[in-house]
Image (cartoon, rainbow, N blue to C red; front, side, top):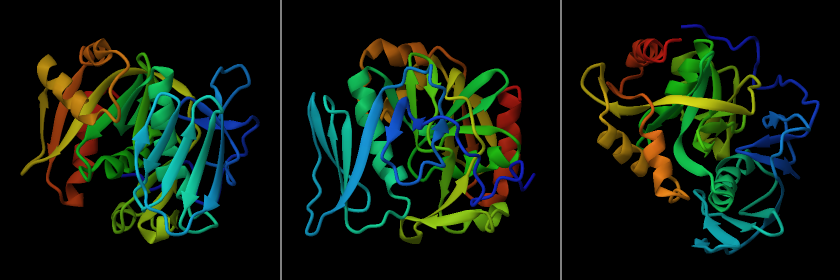
Length: 289
């Protein structure tokens, strides 16, 4: 398995020539924009202004409406999102940011705007081949990020790590990074190229630039199993997996039915990281890349 991504290390980033974005949104106000997707001016992604402020004694809560949302985050913090004002405020336990603005804050913001904009939001990641994008879904802690990192090391470009935002059947690329759990970067041989984030709970691996929009060609559902195995999913199974992975209710029920018509497989592998390379080889064979 290749152990480099065209020489891009965690401290080396191409300088965007235009403002960056993620998940179908042009993002302004982020202190560090290096991991956003460079966007051409012609691309009609709406702008969202983000900011952060410390909040002591915070009791996170989630309340979602048609114009505003309060979203409790993973580390006991909160996102305040305003639809009409196109703003998002991060109520943080402490500043400065240690990577939490990019994730989980921006992921929560993008999920909310995806719902408001009529897009589909799915918990999962995606990578791109010459034919288009392939989504990777599965349960939490189901090996999605480690699989995407292994795909990147095999030369594929990663479109999203934790959230897939779809406009119809077009994937809107997320930030150019993958957040790995402790121990995974060492197993993949990239421990010198990751940056600790979120208080050391994750290690962030930078990715190469990608096209901001790519057509979805199909998807794979990951699961743990005693041996490496692949099976094609029936239309009913595809719909069940997509429903289970939806971050918010789809704007139209038919949207998931359309996605369920695309090619889809279940890829099972043992939980040991030694099974990752053969699983990725099988995945690349399935997607014709």
